[in-house]
Amino acid sequence: MSTAPSNVAAFQGLVDLVSSNVGGCALLCSDDFFAGMDNLTRPAPAAFDPAAYTDRGKLMDGWESRRKRVPGHDWCILKLGVPGRLRGVDIDTSFFMGNHPPFASIDAIFAPDASLEDLTDHLAWTEVLAQTALQRGSHNLAAIASDAVYTHVRLRIFPDGGVARLRVYGDPAPERQAAEIDLAALANGGRAVACSDMFFSPMNNLLLPHRAADMGGGWETRRSRPPGMDWVIIALGTAGTVARVEVDTHHFKGNYPDRAAIDALYWPGAPPASLPGSPEWKEILAPAKLRADHAHVFAVADGGPWTHLRLRILPDGGVSRLRVWGTATDATPADALVAKLAAMPEADLRAALTACCGSRRWVDGMVSQRPFTSRTHLFGAAEAVWWALADADWKESFTHHPRIGGSVDAQRERWAVAEQSGVAKADETTLASLAQGNTMYEQRFGFIFIVCATGKTAAEMLAVLDERLTTSAPAAELRIAAGEQAKITRLRLEKLA
Image (cartoon, rainbow, N blue to C red):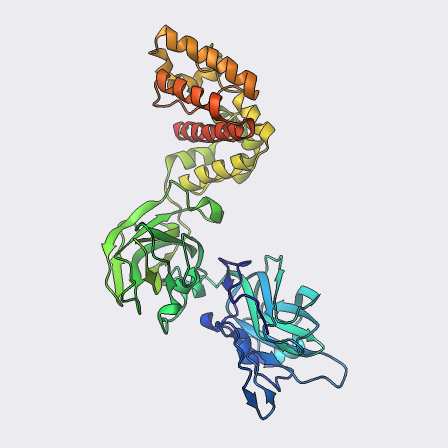
């Protein structure tokens, strides 16, 4: 028997593009004598009944061809429910123990209007997964590296045997539409990219194209102890202006959320890991009361444009579907700072960025990302580039700071005067302690004391210095100082407007 898990975490957050849930289907195969090809796209994990037989043999939950007695191999052509970029596959042989294929490969093609005859006889396929060995009764996972958009895949098994399920994980990439659409729908390219919890059912269920058949077809979090707030972040299929949202609690009766709220931001192509902690989220739907088993439609306070939405549920529970009705747009949010940076000659931009952060590699990384599409993109890129740097780059940036309580180089004082204004009002004893503490700090850690001084008095900075000097390990302190530099950099970027 197979002991493989039914939920594969390796491609969590991606969409199974071939699942029948999103409209995927098997079109044609070379042979399915023992078990039908339609089983390959079923969203439920494969099952096994040891007592079930048909007039052709053991009943298997999958696609199984007969034993080959002639040269060749078997194959199955499947249409994706939505065109997309392939990121990985799971060739699931659960419960196929003595009858699984030893090897398999996968081809793909973009042919939205092709006939079966074209797909089998006339069109050229691209191999996206070379022939690979399969393990029996297992989830056989493989990554796919391709930026091409495909509409069909062809699973080839060598020479024959049974496959329980085929999962084709990727990013939806449908054709753009001009009319009002559900911007979050999987069929329109939307996808859930992160959530606080999905203990009972996965987050991408929210975006499926039809009402759920039961409670398990939605997104449900565990009970929070103590009560708090759960959330899920949706990347819209395309940037768009939002007219209204629908929060559907269909089937959720004793476990629906008490309230729901919606936040939004604009950052095309945002790294998923940067989104949960971003301070740029703007609330466009204040917490609104929900009812059991009901489709709630809400107008939003700001239509955007937006690229991502965050659904917050308070405190926890289940939501069946989230619909985001709006219109695709190429417009970007108006912002004076973003426009100013876009218009700067590169030499001026480099000088301005260097005044914000003295790491040369950080400046190079920021210049390479211009033009910034929004303030969120600008600040998010500043963080992402910063935390991808090496220790030496962080230390280089620290050398562009004056010592707190020490002399200040005139060329570097342009920003620091305001940032360290709390020092100017300090008494002589505090100033002397700051200078002495900074010397001890530099001797211990090898770089000057870095703190985001804005809004802090000299006494408060001295308390922070004493705590870090006495409690931090050197490796940890470098990262603490880097975090302070990131705060300073953001403040300085804001001053460029």
